[in-house]
Image (cartoon, rainbow, N blue to C red; front, side, top):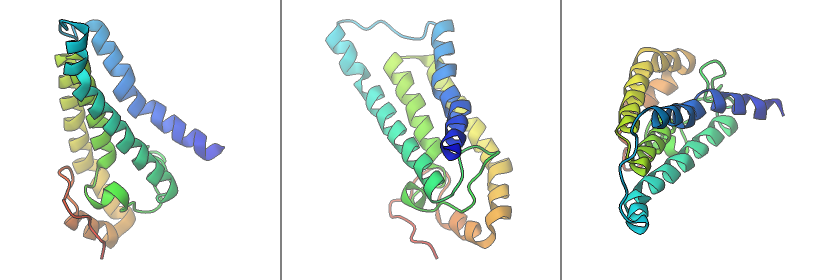
Length: 168
């Protein structure tokens, strides 16, 4: 039960805020969505956003499960994984969880036709890129040493490799 609470707390404080709270605030404070025309055309034009959001959510959920099962930790920096997670989508790209959240944000921007949400998605990516370069990656190198260095050398940060990394 305590493990579930640890994960819920980290999800509520981090991605929930990014994907639900901030977009809700932005949509409420900006002229966030464009006119839609006929309802059928509006849905068709927004369908790609819904698909991206669903794909991002699935990727995010998969990563959270891997952090719990394989890494024995959470997505939160204050309760990190105890083991390096280099399986599943992590064999293709080093930050698939952030990619999943970014897909959700881009999906929301398309779904609501919101420039404010598109800017938020860009700010989210820039903030995370900076955080990973400055803090996260050096911390992973200190915690996991040579295994992380080998992983980092073979798996790209943001653009997925086509073939999965098999490890060394």
